[in-house]
Amino acid sequence: QSMDCLKVQCAVWQQPMTSFAKKTSPDLPLATWEQARACLWEILSEAGSYGQPGVITLSNVKRLFRSRFNLELSETSLGHSRLNELLQDTRFSDICTMDMQGKTQVVVQKVKPPGVWDVSGGYWQGAEWAGQYADEEAQACGLDPNAAPWCPAEGD
Image (cartoon, one colour):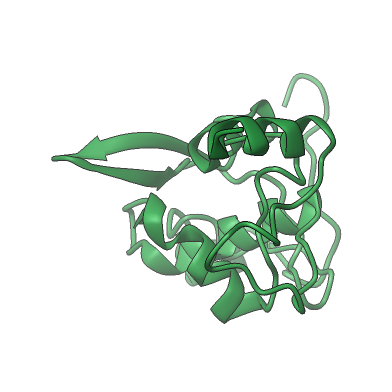
């Protein structure tokens, strides 16, 4: 069987390819959907600058998960055979999009806040949305990063 067939089989069974992959760390826990969303949002937020979305190369995504969060991002354990397909899943649609910069695939942060919980402490990231809101604006609006997310009422 080819490697692609093995990846598809692992994706169908939602199992990691740790025994085949050259860069995986079998000692690291696998990222859940919630962790994958939260970690990717944090990585992209830190890659961005005020008013600009974060952009990272696709080839760095897994390495950043391992080095920053001690988590293994396994596309096959989340049901996809390719990383770029995973990041285009509807569950990431409010977090990022895929794009090309020259011949390099990049992950681009969505500008609107996705409602992501902090990976380590479980608190709302109210003042850290894509560099779109300055800290002063967040404070002026009464956003508290330790509070539950604010949801506008219908008609607001």
